[in-house]
Amino acid sequence: MMEYFAVAGGSPLAGRVAVHGAKNSALPILAATLLADGESVLHNCPALTDCDAALEILSCLGCRVRREGDTVTVNTACRRGHAVPDHLMGRMRASVLFLGALLAREGAAEACWPGGCALGARPIDLHIQAFQALGAQGRSWNGQLFFHAPGGLSGCRIALPIPSVGATENAMLAACGARGLTILDNPAREPEIVDLQNFLRCLGARVSGAGTGRIVVEGGRPLHPGEYTVMADRIVAATYLCAVACAGGEGELLGTDGACLGPVLAALTAAGCTLDRGPGRLAIRRGGELRGFGALRTGPYPGFPTDAQPLLGAVAAGARGQSRITETIFDRRFRYTEGLAAMGAAVQVEGDTACFSGRPLHGAWVEAADLRGGAALTLAALGARGESVIGGLPHIDRGYQGLEKALAALGGHIRRVTGPA
Ligand code: UD1
Image (cartoon, rainbow, N blue to C red; front, side, top):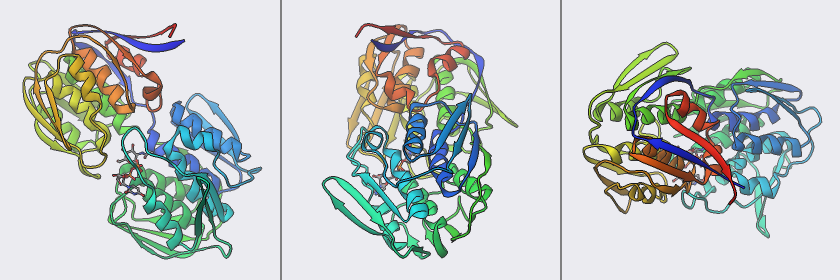
């Protein structure tokens, strides 16, 4: 059986939807539960297939995990081993985040070498350099990566040449288990790094500086389990906003005020949307014509988030006028434009830049090639005249908890259909 979204596009939205917890916070935080013995409780932990994979890794490491709604309990008391299973490493690249936590806790970590992924090469050299700087010895044999720190990890100075999100998180996790002070210069400043810091503090760790140009970890302290609420997902929020931009009408998002979405809100305003922010809510309206938003360029936070660029691509495709998107983080992030072209979009990709001359879209049969690209095609379908079918839902389910239900709550005509392949 295969699943697809059936979308009847072309009518404006009206509705309200709650934004679920952030995938990119929940994953490092789930890895961080390994740092303390006992039962940690995470609220607002989204039910995504990526989070399921993280919970499976914890189970394989001997932890007892339980989910009730959006609350997840992880009991690490019986944890054992230090290897991330190959099939889970293959299912989700973010499995690499368990290496830092395992090194901190077990003094050893093992995983298969992660290959390229849908977005491009995605090396992990910076993760490895951070582990080595902290005193871990690493070797690679037969496609497996082994790290161990027989004498324990020691705090050090690490300067990241580029602010990698995953390398920052892995360095923070490993540094919690290292003796003494670790100073991490040029870390990623994403809000999810701040969320990880807040969780680590809730376990009793001494970490400061997340969100700035220097993170300091005073490692080697005994940690205790904690209870924590994961932040709202800013990319999911951006997705719902772009749905209203694409289809027109109005929508209200609950559980976020859009504080970390500055560049996305600016692009949507330039495209002719009106935004209204309040405590714990964010409303959007697009009554008139959707306009091209000019040029945008992705960059590390606080720049324009690469994860939101396909969503703005969907907006650009159906707008009147020119838009231009330059992708600076990943090299294979424009594959969704083929699906947009099938819907009638005028889009040209040259190197790292996609140029859109917006025009009315029509429904089409398209296939998601990756997570955010799949969401972008779904949004474009809501704004397109006629029926669309979007396949490749396993990509979308990695990062959206029931995207079709959320978009239906916003007034979209969309349903998930299960049928023979
Ligand atoms: C995280 C997010 C992902 C987001 C990305 C950029 C999670 C689970 N995923 O991915 O959704 O799109 O941040 O905001 O949080 N790089 C290296 N060497 C390394 C590591 C990274 O060269 O060792 C490069 C990458 O190829 C890329 C850039 O650094 O060009 C940024 O990648 P990074 O910030 O590490 O992304 P992820 O942590 O993989």
